[in-house]
Image 1: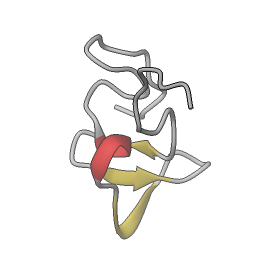
Image 2: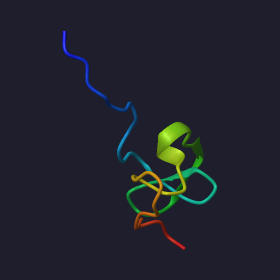
Image 3: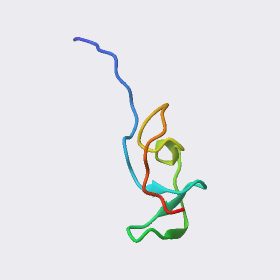
Image 4: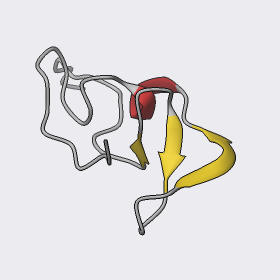
Length: 57
């Protein structure tokens, strides 16, 4: 069996604001729903560098 290096994680996911609240398709916060883990990263869908995100101000 060949072994290679890799990573486990998500790429993308729900849109979140700076408080990890999930944003719906209309740009509104979904009350009581918070993201956790990789999807709540402040860098968005990337690792280590800021990503452009379409989160309402």
